[in-house]
Length: 198
Image (cartoon, rainbow, N blue to C red; front, side, top):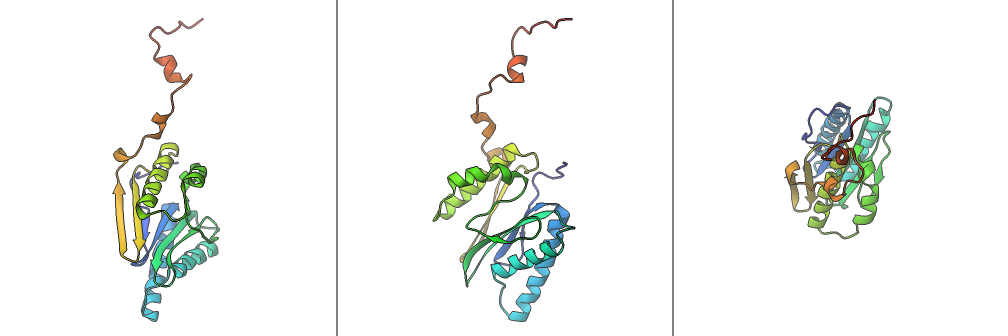
């Protein structure tokens, strides 16, 4: 796998109050986002009010499902609307839609399920939730070669949208938590290596 840009922004605005987090093929996720943004703009003009998070997520689901044989992308749609408040939906490969209190996706997510089982709790503050996301993405970066090198967050609530950026050099270095044991580095760092037998 080739990662062209470890700091690319994979969070895309769909409306003022709804964003999508993209994973998988950049081209596929961008074209789905572009179509959904266009449809949501038309929806807003026709109804005279912004689309709900559920409408946006179902548009993503519809496009993903109807093109499941051609798309290699998983998406997370999150946002806030005046009818249901904050909502988040996972739309993995194939176009299933799953509403959850939290959702994870992308290649690094397979490293995070146990972490979220332990760390996520109902009723977290905004600050606690953001720090959980920063910690989770930094764990994924440490273990998955395709998970980028920075953390970007978006907080969406009744007060508006706040975007934050955490550069890679400010993130925890998880591999330093474990003491190396019987590693190749231990052998290479010995002062007098054993001669090779011929």
